[in-house]
Length: 126
Image (cartoon, rainbow, N blue to C red; front, side, top):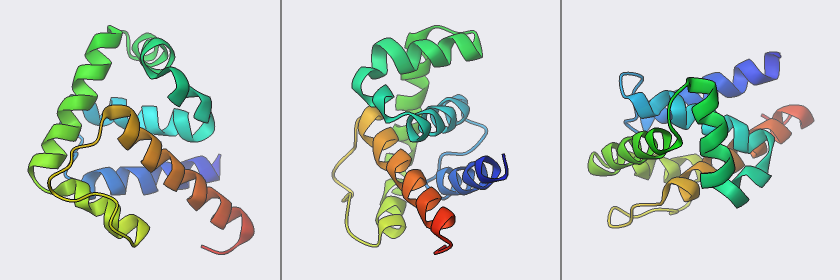
């Protein structure tokens, strides 16, 4: 439970640094999607038919709304240069200003970082 809270804070901070703020509808959907993928990477194999459907049930909306709001949040981050924060997160150039990742690509790369963060915490390296 404590580890989940640490990941939640880490992820919230990361999204805000990327320019994806809590006032955007896609913020909650994106944060939850990333946490689900970090816990179960197989969600990435069926993002439209499984991840969006599960999120839609959880939030009582349509899967299309989940996809659209996440895409809107990513577009907002891209337009303000916030996606470059991922480069700081990894310490290498992952994205340049001229590239906008897909929903599944961004969810996957951040979920991977959450998993790495977890493993470092478990090993006492963080």
